[in-house]
Image (cartoon, rainbow, N blue to C red; front, side, top):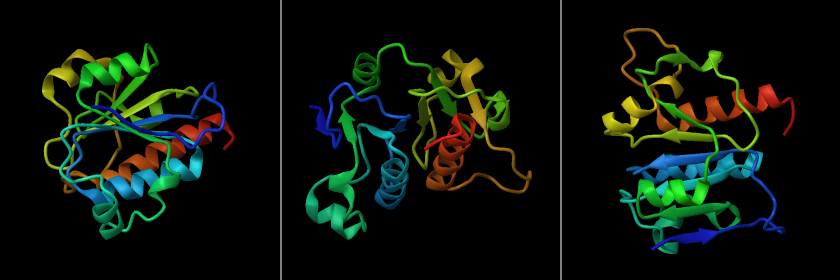
Amino acid sequence: MSETVSTSTDSLDTPLLHVVLYQPDIPQNTGNIGRTCLAVGAKLWLVRPLGFRLDAKHLRRAGMDYWPQVDWEAVDDWNTLLERLGDRPMWFLTKSGRHSLWEASFGRGDVLVLGSETRGLPAALLETHAARTLMLPMQPEVRSLNLASTATAVIYEALRQFETL
């Protein structure tokens, strides 16, 4: 079952970016990323299963009161996501990425894919798309960054490259 909410006034409008959360666990991270998507005109995609419910009560509890304004869609699985997004270029964020974020050349309409907070992205997906994996440089004593922080850094790097909002 696919849920869609689009705040776009023209169905031909293309979001600046597509941000995919693959099986996210923590509603607050999803809410923060949704807020960032709203701020920059990106579309948020959620790939099930989710670690939380998307009903109004749970969204309010997670502090996501602006959620009705976010352009988002939840899909049941990876294949459904691929069908919906078509052949747009995808970037896969992982702490073991082949390339630094600073090496990427982002384009309007690109897809940024982030994994769950506890499991990351599936190994098979990362292997298939190894050439398109990105990581944020960090000191070796840091195991990982917060998902919402990572998403925001990557989204704003893409915007910096576009030189526009």
